[in-house]
Image 1 (tube, rainbow, N blue to C red):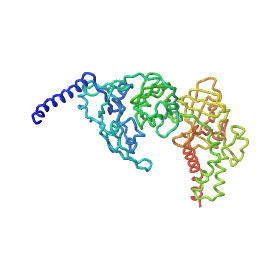
Image 2 (cartoon, rainbow, N blue to C red):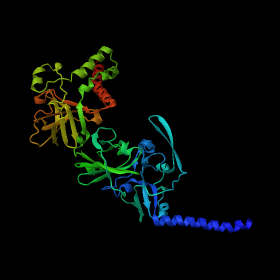
Image 3 (cartoon, rainbow, N blue to C red):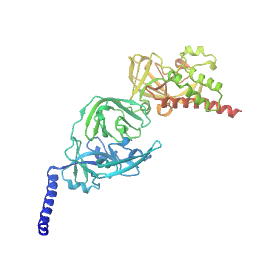
Image 4 (tube, rainbow, N blue to C red):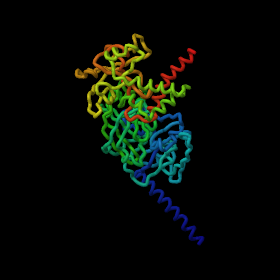
Length: 482
């Protein structure tokens, strides 16, 4: 037996070396497929017009980059969660030996990483195993795949790593995209219709294509969240690349899928119009809904007022903005300013107003479009009330369309959904007295709107602001006088 083992050992070693050589030779000959951590700028380099600004996403919260449900499809290097570094994506490499030269590490079926996060006061610990452990690993870390994936990027290494465009063409799918208000970004796009397409998949990347061919890449948390909400800030390279253009296509990349759908999203150069992007309905009919009265009273009574006084303020703050007289008719009716009632409705049969890029449009209650025009800024005009200048301005926009009539001019206050949860504006055929609250054809009329499809949080924040600005100031003045 001893002599047999002595003879068998060299044979076994030789077979083992042959097997190892065969696998290596196969990798050299047929290439290797891996899942790899790719920094954002290198992932997008062959996909977009300019990837130089697509660096890691810094995060102050330290939790979002480390939460798979929020940042799925991405990876982070810093275990503390200071940033999101890039994308996890399938890669083909002809020579597997170069993988060890890039500074990453091999992740195997036995690899695991335990991540504890605290979101909304609740602590959760998740263990990521196997390929999922790439979520918290160095750039260029890799996990070997058993076979060829549906799509991949090809890695070449010369002076440094270079990744090709994805090897597949984007398949056309049916989906819709619209501008909405969300606190994540100045410009937010909500995507609907991808629920089935994205089911069970993490989004690796999204590319926005403009009508002039400009292609812009988006990054996790900063620009894309939950897979179906996209956005960017006015101070971003994405806005700089897209302003004044129209987004005509939205393209998605996942580890297993590649698809795109058509869009029509004009990105305004004017920053106020950008902030006003969205569809609006009349604010005050929503304010006076019975379901919100208790919250109104709660906000009012927070100033130490009794029930009767709170009811008085509630009636005043709701009913005094539901007038239907404006212009000369209102001037003649309100000879005593103490009895004035402002008209805050959308007049001229308008039920909804939409701002999309530099285009403003309106529909009636049945959804019939009554006007649609492109507008450009004209001037800022100081607001006056009974001849007195107020610390506010109206920002005036005009269309050059000859048939615009009553919709030739739009004048907006500073209010935006991000700042005050509502907007205020006027529209008409004349520039005269467009910023006067008590004179001319616009007297006692200032339309107020809230986002169509608003949530409970938005309108309650708006109610509280309205109470604070009116009741709070009145109480403060009374206390100062006493």
